[in-house]
Image (cartoon, rainbow, N blue to C red; front, side, top):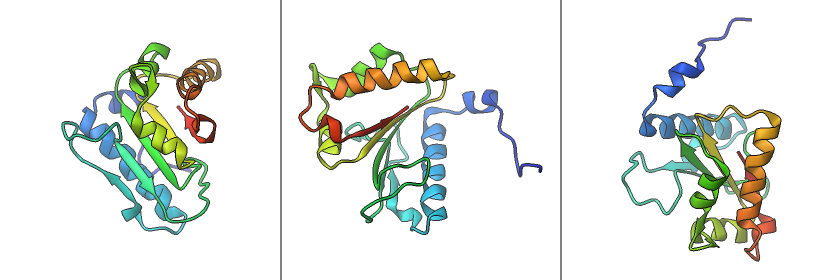
Length: 152
């Protein structure tokens, strides 16, 4: 089977931050639409300079449960990062003054999902496990942290 188009990692690395955000948002729209919902339930600012409260892409499908394989919760925040996200970078991204950021804390209270998409990281299973552990460590102090689905 031949793919309609092939995208190499080098092609993706040439994307700007704004293009990466748009690509992830459009992939989320396609995923939502493929499961019978309107792509209008996917929102993003389209500007990396707009105040977003830590939300690059926000999926909010008005259903009780949504499991598409890529989106595990009907309320999902996707954070687009062109650069590598080390454990320290993850902590810096998710915590404000040692506390879970208000945006992520609210997402945890809703029982939603928070996903970091890092373009430069080539995640082996061990590397992904380390990144997920850093995310779990960041939410550990929040009373609703256990309700939040995390992925990297």
